[in-house]
Amino acid sequence: MIQHNRAPANSVSADPAKTYGVAFVGSGSAKLEAVLSNAQLAEMVDTSDEWIATRTGIRQRHIAGPTDSIRSLGAEAAAIAIAQAGLNPIDIDLILLATSTPDDLFGSACQIQHELGASHAVAFDITAACSGFVFALVTAAQFIRTGAYQNVVVVGADLLSRLTDWHDRRTCVLFGDGAGALVMQRCEGSADHLLSFDLHSDGSLNDCLNAAYERESVPLTGDITVQKGRFQPVTMNGREVYRFAVKRVPEVLEKALFYAGLSTHDIDWLILHQANQRILDAAAQRLNIPAERVVSNMAKHGNTDAASIPIALDEWVQSGKIKTGDTLALSGFGAGLSWGAAILTWGK
Ligand code: ACO
Image (cartoon, rainbow, N blue to C red; front, top):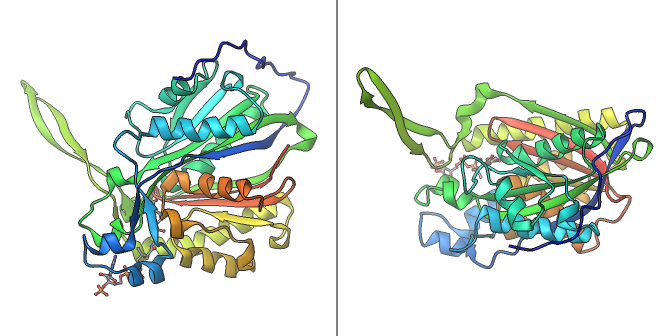
């Protein structure tokens, strides 16, 4: 546990007469050591590096080590993002954790809060699978724009290896583990850096992609029964999800751009959930965004669920490709089904 003895720097107080905006001031991601290559997967199931690479763009993925957890990796990513923002953990008012694989079903955000020593922050989890990071970012913005909170950390962390059926070649080649984080800060309303967003859900398509709780009724006493069971590994209708993604992702981005009063020419970087290179290519083509402005790191990481957007964002920030003032278009999509987009300007 990191110890912080400093007094809180922020006062979580808002002037009701003022309007507030959001700035994006820091990013971070956790380093995972173990790498699982396509060649290694081909020793486990009937697949090949060639099939995986041509159908998905994925070459390898990281797998959490025996002592890694959502708590440790989420806190590692958050600590880097907080330091990059020039803040201390004690300055943080709110921690939102987007995850579908918490260490504790009651939520892991509080564990991250404790690990960081962010003792002034309220912390809770948000579950929206691969859309989770965008949904959490937009949720954070609501708390900031009302003036309620000044410094917010949004963490996207998932260990999909926990929910993967390693005998199912249709899914096990896709997923990896990871954690990324972003710090959002209150600023003047006139300087709001979150230009627009658009979020959607369609529960009628839930069967296309889920990790369902399968249960049976077990007698308890008299005529009372209780449900006993466990969460099943991820099952996915890949073709349906693919069709859904290539239709909905460009659509939601076009809508968000319209709300922002921008066109695709104004986008410096398109950062989509890293599910499949073919989905990225199809969306970019439909939006007429050149490949060199599309962020892609799935060859290295695979699909890391809620972590994929913040990891990609952080890698592009750390390498200096994303610069202060750049306009970013983010879009997450996946289980729910759910999908959403946010258009923002990077920096203070
Ligand atoms: N290796 C070799 N062959 C395989 C593999 C594999 N790993 N997986 C499937 N195949 C076979 C199938 O059995 C099928 O063979 P058949 O024609 O003899 O039946 C053939 O390859 C084609 O299968 P498709 O499912 O049609 O393959 P497709 O080109 O659609 O690619 C994929 C599959 C990569 C899963 C694609 O559908 C996809 O990316 N879908 C979207 C996934 C996604 O975006 N998920 C996002 C959210 S994830 C989340 O929210 C947690």
